[in-house]
Amino acid sequence: MKSKLLTKKSILLTLLIVCLLLAVSFVANKTIVKDRLERNAYILEYSPKTSDDGLHVIGFEQDESGEKVGNVISFLGGTDYNFDTSYIPEKIDGTKIAKISDRAYTTSPSIKRVYIPECITEISKDAFSNKSELQFYVEQGSYAEKFCKENGLSFEYYVYQDADIPKEKIVTGKSYKNFIYNTYFYDNNIFCVITKYNNMSDVSVLEIPGEIDGIKVSAIANGAFRGCKNQQTIILPDTIATIGDYAFADCTSLKDVYFTENIKNIGSDVFSNSPEAQIHAPKGSASEKYATDN
Image (cartoon, rainbow, N blue to C red; front, side, top):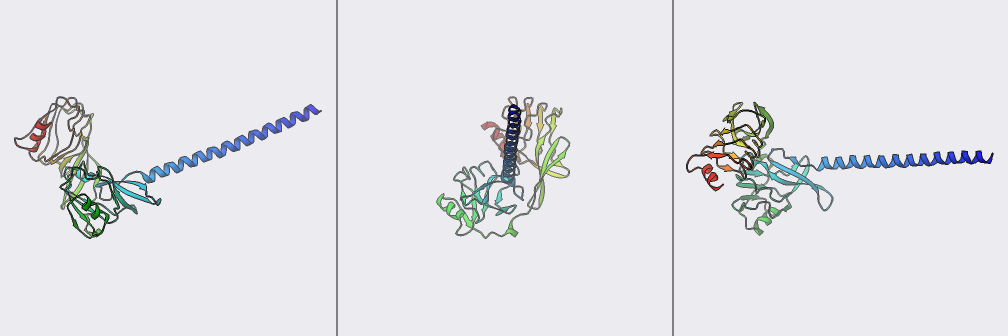
């Protein structure tokens, strides 16, 4: 009889331990799931975004007080779109933009003017490296004014008025035949930038169109033709003024590329790992100088 009582107690104790372990496991799993959800939500909230004008990449972080703020990571307008002016916005999705990060403008060959609103309270010393000829527009008494004075940069005063800032929106991800392109507005004209070409295309002699859907093609974006294996000859139209970094990199079959005299801005490593590529360019053009220098 005593043995049976002990057995029942053992069973009850075992069941109790199992229940406790299940409860602990449930709580632990619930905590893990909660942590993962919170981490995913944080990543989503703080992931970089493109500004409303489509020209600036804005990152996010917390300042010393724990407030979420934005920082300008890069100016797309000066790399992919040949824009010469950057109007830094005050906010993105209601979040104040407070910083300009390292090298935000160093890869923008066409940039000439930067408008910096008063909300910017921190600028990396390398944000505008190799851009000594830039003209800055700042608000009087702002941190940007102090930054320009301390670094010997040319500046003028302006008053930030949202109505004065262009509202053009870049439309991304359109397609035409084997091309992916973006459209944008500038000086009351509409242009397009080729951002990607189908690297599975078997066209050996590729003539890039000067217009797509009636819109003038003005630039080739970074890496647009990278990895194309079957193109041996590429002919550019005279509408293109800018060619981005690595535009024709890793094109192992590419032999001849025909540039025009209208190409003014050429990025770095345009033909990286394209060993047989040869540039054909008009004498005295920026394209010829690029070919000679590289």
